[in-house]
Length: 309
Length: 298
Image (cartoon, rainbow over all chains, first blue to last red; front, side):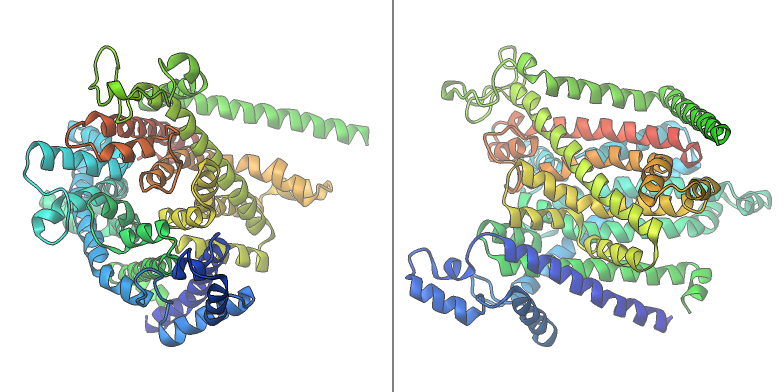
């Protein structure tokens, strides 16, 4: 198991190197001179040129990339923000807990809505509940979350006045963003839980459990759900990763100061080191979440654990 | 020699007939799925609206009149007017043109590029496969909306760049699907037979492998159009996508959000249009998947 984790961590390195290369290249080809952006439009040309030399922007592309990777690996340095002049990593780390909290709440909402709905749908296949929840799930997948967020604000903040329309410091402020972010994932988890459960409850051992007189709730929760969990956990893990990335839109709607909003603001301000750092950081988190999900399989299914050796 | 040729021709005709009858069978199964037919009907309406927008829309998409700002939905303006006095219904009709264009072209970019890469990786295997698929892993390590945002940040906003960004962000999923299909098909006997009669790799991939791997690609593409429209609307919502005055639904929604407290209709209807489009594409895509592979049902 340890070997497997170590191997996966080692495999993560070339992937992250690749991500850093792609992101660095994209930011490199973006029009706009970083030295000019930092010094301002009115700065004299000589000063800009001197600054370019200091930043190493006149060096060939690969040298610049090599320096970026070296600073990143050795000093965990992603450069400095053009606007605040603070280290990018600091800017990201200040906001990351908020994004993480938002994504975690989103996935909690998704799991709490999705798994029970999926289980009930599967155990009562083709019932009114099943049909309704499947249509609701399809609507949930089809609803743009930024629109859903606005509609929630319209209903709960503007019309009813129950919940605030922005911020993320109190639990009241967290409800609408978490619902907004979690709905589409809830829909995906519902569909996956239903199909995975349907596959399992047709198995012989479920029939056996029922035949020996086992209580239905034990049959469903202990026998069926446990065996249907692998694909569900995969989807939850993937969704959590997507929520970290997808938080960009939710943070913009509810004016939440997270990594996503920082990135959007940085794109508008052409603050490229922050954009670059933000993408790298979220990609790393996304990859680690995927790795954790793979490790979790081993605890859910001992057969998988034996394959990891 | 001529006998062998006649035999091959006859076989080709029978394969073509079989393929045609397979698609007819798929269509027959699809027709039985009511939800899927509803989806197809709505998609057809949207395509119709997009093509004939000039005749359907009561006004132009940028006909401003500041004397009639914020008019609520009613008889004069079916869905009301926005903050610049433009007719929202007309803008939504014209917007279908942009959304469908983005959806289909972005999926086209992704399917052709991803499909080609996947086919090459699956067919040739070895180092080439490894290189292509590791590259796809790298792209998959970045959440797709974030990748699209980064690409648009690099290329700049605008219709073409949004299509490219959304298309590139979707390449890995097509590469994976096509590669998996190619791997299951390439060792079958008819491929061996094609090799034996001297068909080159290009012919084998395009004439024999890809037509047999179409089912998952078509399903992915249908659902992919929905995702592409959603991503493009998301990009426009945060100001990185299609720029005003173009009536892109996400951009309309974004403009309307500032007035949501007093004028709910400006942001509500473009969002409904997006939802209806994605919903119908998902309905159709789900039905298509079931029709192409009934084993996947449930």
